[in-house]
Length: 426
Image (tube, rainbow, N blue to C red; front, side, top):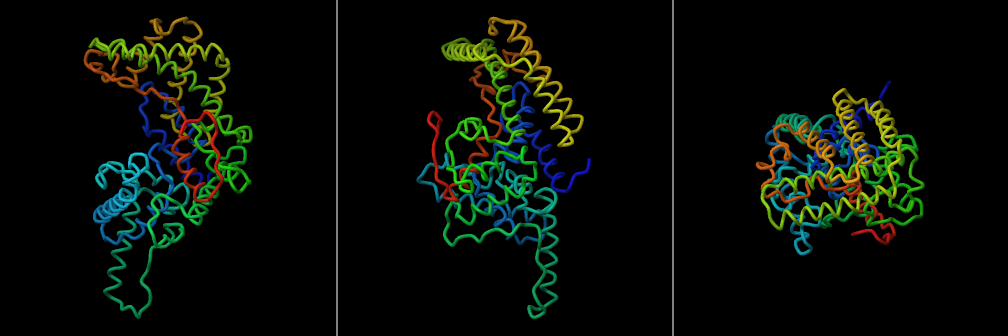
């Protein structure tokens, strides 16, 4: 199978995402999330907060002038620190926590700078057009800056313009004279929308939902932007989503519904085996008993179809072929699938999972295989003393939230009319 350069780049970025741990994954089902997220919202991760970073970063990083890699890294960190400071000042009266400022508490000392969080997405969108990592960029820029400085000493200004770095960054819109924080101008929003649309080379039936919602879910199609959706499958245009992408979305939603009971049971067991007795432990037990009863009622009312996991596996095998996944990813998938298949059998055969020793053993063995020597349930007296609950206790949205933040910013810049759906949380 032949792949062009863009396909190979997208594949590399996706495979890197498979090893990313954006959220706690106590039972090792994150590969399901990663595979499906990679089709629905490619390039997005939980580290993404606002669309404007896709403009801040090329503007800031292209201006660095140091002549060694180490000096460029320090200059880059300082530049990103100045940007964080400006954003903190811009939003200090509006509540910093909710604004999506990366490093709003620690400034340039934050462990995950915007450049490292967004580098993969900038490459995918063709905003950064060079090869490799941020450090590879620093190496190329250091060589250029050193050469430029040497040429400046040897030649006068009358000899013509000195060489510049060309082709590494897409031509981006000029920065406005005032500082608008995270707000996008119409020109900036149009530019970002075009980056997403042009970077999606998939067949129409396999388009990402990011590009589809920028193309079909907004002003280009004469529609309003639907904001405040908890999950993308609640979108009123869901029936029009690209067919194969929608298939992956529904498989993900249904499998996650099946697995949520395992997350409830895991947390119940952690609370049950917590060695310290008291009101806090009792409250946790009551919380997970209630959650299990609610989940069980939903499962009994709408049982997972018998072919769900077969359909999921068939889809995943095709997806692995497209992204040219290696043996490690396939082994991880097979182990995860066996875990989920056994869990489905336990649901069918057990009247009370909270009291089912086979179900308990299944989760305990799974945790022990994933975290040898660190499993909570293996040594509860050591690892569950004062345990506060909610370990990996969440529903997969398949990176809808970070993708929504980017889409919402772009639609705001495009001045797309907005509408909210009743029953969705803010």
